[in-house]
Image 1: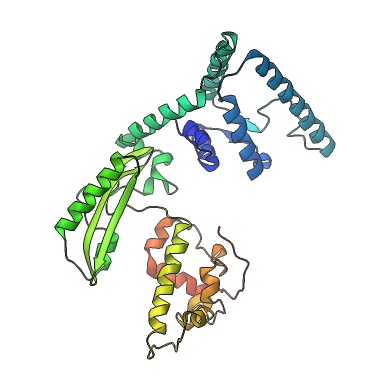
Image 2 (image 1 turned 45 degrees about the vertical axis):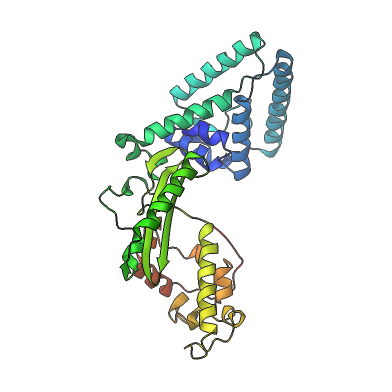
Length: 341
């Protein structure tokens, strides 16, 4: 189900995660990013809408010509792994259950061609059914707690909080909470309306006023393929969205400092502050005395991509003191080329 869902949504990484889970073994030398995308396109073509006999014959001739050209180039370049007429030359191993399914799919397409049943949306049908299967599977504890496609990159070590765990990470960090029941009820109703209209999958809403958390609600499900509910304590992998949110928070803080003539850093403008070293605000950063500026840090040019702890995972980010200590020990002098991963 995961394979079909990812094929339908052009999710290259998801496809190969699912194939690895099924027991596929790929030749390492073949697995470039370009080739992964090519495999995804080929797999989509195998399951595309059925066509006429004439189109099938024409496609077979094109495929054979491409295979011959690939083998010819591989022989000239001495790349023996590619010098095979097998369309699955890049595999070291293929599970028997998958082979049986591919044969069944070929039979189905062959029947459609023989009956001239054109336009049968095979991939669309499989995607729809796979989404339903993934949603149902997410509600089964034995699957959602054991399969990587539900547990995420950190595998079985990460579990959803129980229903009794109502305190969210953000509420624990604020000095106090002053609940506005009427506001929370209105927000819940709005989230439910968005979900029923198909305009939202899952969401969390927190409102802070006067230093107090007055609204902390959630609604919907974890994803379009995971029906487990979103709670206030649910963590989401924000990835690239974190940069924008983090930069906005830093800029707002710098503006407040610039508006305070008595600030401890002597900042008179946000532009001036962005050109200051991070060590001006955090003396131990980057091994101490680092020349990396706030501008470089916010622009992904601080070199942090190569400064992760050994065995880094998302759970490290919950240990603020440990990460702070680590970043004070890693030398970061800069400037570095901007990188996002």
